[in-house]
Length: 413
Image (cartoon, rainbow, N blue to C red; front, side, top):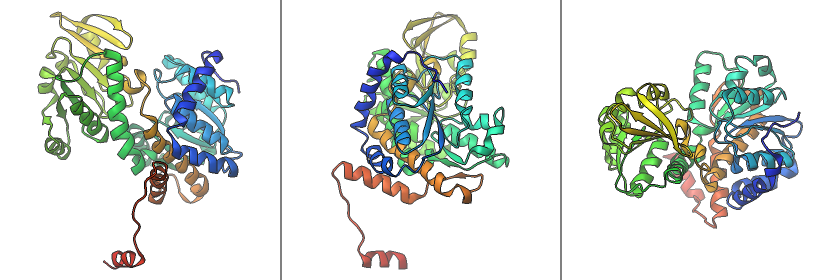
């Protein structure tokens, strides 16, 4: 099937991007070296729907080298990099994606990918799985299983499982230690502020930063904001996470109170309507809003438009909303994932761990799907240990090992 991309002539700079990140992804490099010889995925078709940038491209190539017939689509209209998509096509991967696609084009891309009748999927946010359980349900019987990259997608999967509707096994890659401990905390923490600072060209130090949600992503973003010199405020619905934020040295208050004092607002909850019209009504002139949750629903854009007397683009990825009292509020990257829509996503060293989880999740599905049932599963912890060990070795680090006597002692305790 012919790929759908913007411009194949962009491929050279896409290759440069992919080759650059390879230097900093030694775990995937080790995987590539081993499994390009044994080719365990030979004869299998795999659809990968993720943010299509250089690190994702490298994962796609590792699966291809391991024998899979790979099709890649984007999982967000603003995160696809056209030069990377072109490079993948030159390397023999089928791609259906381009930057700033419409919602209609996005649906076409997903359906084109599914038209290849995949055996396995790698999803990010749950859109592929949703299609396979609705409009493209006729293809579900072909799927031996897959994995899910993000919190939002895992929530959707668990809802399907709870209703007894899930049709094939899915590994919650997001819930693996080597994913969320590093990707969600250090990856989101750094890349979110990369996107915000690149887009605004403004200082973070001295500003009141409001972080909505104190899960692993919120923890990372708050830690980085503090390190940049901001005064950090956390909003939460979970009293345990709120207490944790207090003990970590942050102020905690309801969004209605935080809205009055915040300079920069960042949502990382996975829920909708976190910032609404009652919050817009009390925000400072010049307040900026960004989202790092998977879908663009955390900042209510419909209500923001309704309460504004005019809107305009003032800079790439910054839209100005003028209020009736002439206050100006700013929305970054259309309220989409700011670290990818306005940046390059997580650092390569972080995604090295996350994508190793994805590869080994797929390998586990391949080898065990007949005995797994249609459930949302965790990747076995020994694989986490293996990934971490490869990463440590790549850094030139070693750790202690238990002696036989120590192992015996622990097993008897």
